[in-house]
Image 1: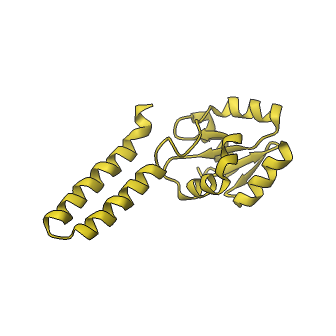
Image 2: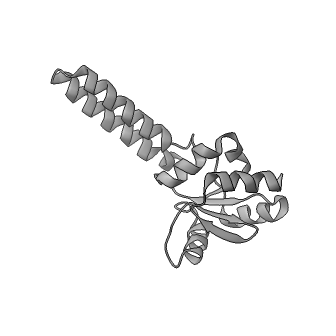
Length: 145
């Protein structure tokens, strides 16, 4: 679990160091803007933004039972973040698989994307969709409910 916090903590520390440097050079306004930007990046890349990931096999098993989509993602992916934010509260209904933590998830994504680890890859009813429109994913969620 601690590994998931490395990137966000590095962003906070880097932003703090850069902001301190800006304050020392007499630019407190720039320091505040940079610090807020780094804090926003840290927040978006933190485990708090994405619901808890599960393994690919478990996600596929659950999806077969409840019909909800499986989203394969990785930390730092701007398209994954966009999907997560645009899904809003309904993102908790999706089965999330972090391909950097689950080798079986990475294999599933490569199989669906000609050997590339292109994310987000959303699997609905066993069929993969690479970087689908968030509205389409919400529609799939409403159909499975």
